[in-house]
Image (cartoon, rainbow, N blue to C red; front, side, top):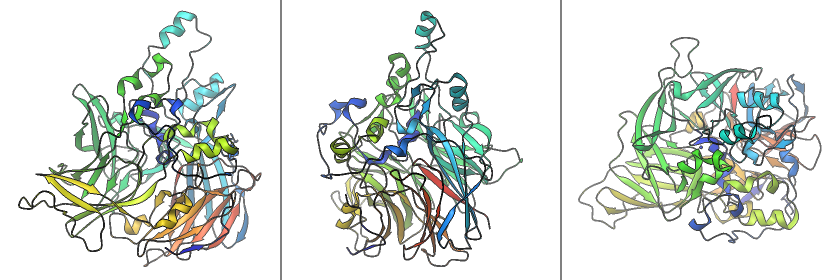
Length: 581
């Protein structure tokens, strides 16, 4: 497929589900280092190489601790920032990787640092603030890591005697409130979220931490994802696990759009549907879910959580990650739930083993459910993002990258209506020009294969992750464009616009520049889907204090302007735009 390049090419889990929050955001992309805890007996691809890339530049400065900037500072504008953009571009991610003399082992364990780019009248200011979470405050008070995170085990208090330290090993892991994954909205308020049961309400103007909110105080769940979906009326849907004497359940959650009282947070939240885990003590890990106008789709992938290992991790002196593993002997199952009635479809849709962390879009059309998402054929991902790996260089860095399975956009087509007269073995996907299949294998059973939403050219850019669309216009509807990061490094190193009419890509890429998740902001009164701008924070780890906010034209993908920030900023995960109009 043709490619337009806008710049030079680069040369060279609740703590039962707990800190799996950070499986987020980068976790969809790779293979695990076999020394970090995944069950090697489950897969034989220990030495498998998916790519043969050499000469990757070192990016260790992406994981350097920084100070917060609590007062807005001015930025240097190059080009033109459209004057119609008015609001706050909010970003979340780790910003502190050491406490005293102790260090976090995993990138996703770093203390949450919240960022704000305030855009108005063609000018941009920047500020940041560490989330005032309980674990952040306690860590600073004791000047050491006292709360275990996904890849870091907190050591017993050295001030306790031997017997006290021994007994502390038998305490159950406590869920972290280090919400460093994303900004989310409920009832008009902004929260920062991970995947435990804790969120924090945030003032988007000052970035101050206002209130800690516990999901389990409102409904019987042990956490919720950092990627809720929102209906046009403001009703918000999410998913979270619960653990009972009958086993693990996946719960679809609904939060009403409006407050009854100004102090409301999650009041009125209800569980729409509970789906039992196929394996009661080893549920699947999930980072997000798909939602159309009338349905929620839960994707039960074969990334499994061994609950016994997770709850005994402190006793054994192991990280939470040691209880998570890829089981390619199991297929992926798509559970379709009517979000109005809460009823689970009687049809069991399945596909080959895959891992997915971010969905692109999902919509209904002519009796079919069209589900687009970023997928990988290998689920051994997360622990390649150990801090020590991100600081590697030369052949060692290339080796880490080449043993990671790439992620690509794919489309699955699920038939919503099953005619009992149709014989087994027939493809139920009758959509014109669709190469996806939905084969009836038995009564109420369908096996699905995907259609690639890309051409061969996307391989050159390392696949695509962090997908975004014009959400306000296109979420749960037919659409044409999506945006994402290309991954020809351990983190995003290009920005990509995909046109589904012809599967053509347009690319923004510069050497030694690492853009964040692209956020689409529509122009006021926009009618066309791509009429707006793309916002992305570009990190330059090999240039001091040269990070900038990038603004691209949504149609042409050409750079309109940038706002250079005179400080260093770590690479973050997810963000959102708070419209000031």
